[in-house]
Image 1 (tube, helix red, strand yellow):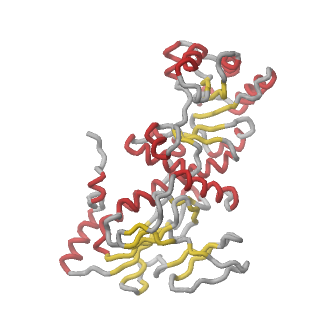
Image 2 (cartoon, rainbow, N blue to C red):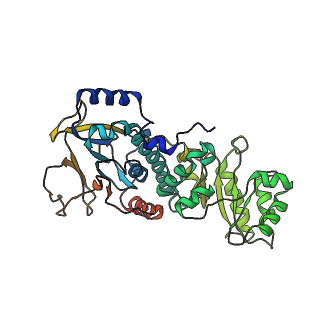
Image 3 (cartoon, rainbow, N blue to C red):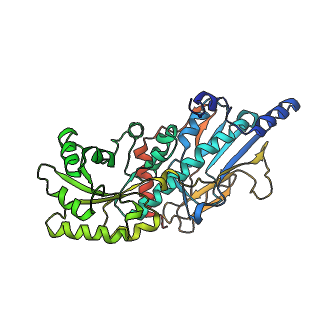
Length: 386
């Protein structure tokens, strides 16, 4: 059997920390069930990031669809900063107490993956970025990982099921295994070209048997193949100066009239690699760096009880608005009771914590992943620096 929770167990609140289960017993025994507001924030972000991407909302709404609660939230794919509330639940505490663990799990990991994908997409400066990391994680999580990589900015995903979820064709080239089975990169590419439908772009993997430069020259001189790109997945033990290897191949291809052939790299690419590699690379396959991204460490805290501000030490009490000025991009956290105000630039602020569910009634439509991704890409281009 797989060591994973069944969906019905999550929906029943079985996936909860035991102290919430014990809390419920005490509250029920004593007849205490206050009306509370609880907010989710991240005080800090991994690796001193300046910003992060809110993701996981769609699964949260599915989890709480039968609960008599209200939720205000950022839209999925919205960029936020430390200490800004990203989601608020209002309801009788006993109605959602045991779901805190699951809600945090849904948004912490999803936001971490989307954030890392967004960072890579920003660093790629317009170049294609594909998510190649699902194989490093538990297969049950693969669609979740790649959906959030996609809405975070990746241009495509590798897993078949993930492609179905985001309603896009999955991306992939060819594995070393195919080339090893044929004993020749050229023969493997020839067979691939004969069998695989022509709508799939031909990308030749060039680092299996011989030097990348000479293998690249072998595959580009196959007239029967409409080659789109070559892919470097050179193991770290053989890379030396990876940039110089790619630069040399690019030179040799250009010199022979193959400047149109794209260069795709994968295998352990980090954020630190991007600035240099961008000079010679057209597309990236990013694996573990995205799929195993550090989570966004949200916490959930009660901030209001029976209409009165109340919070533990270290937290700002009271329900809040997250005001945003679309004109000058200024942001401001204010008490929820305050009336709308104008920004210093003269434009009216907008509260971007919007109502999304009201006592089992969903208030926002289900968005396609492509819509969420496009909204984020627009923000990355106009609002954000790393």
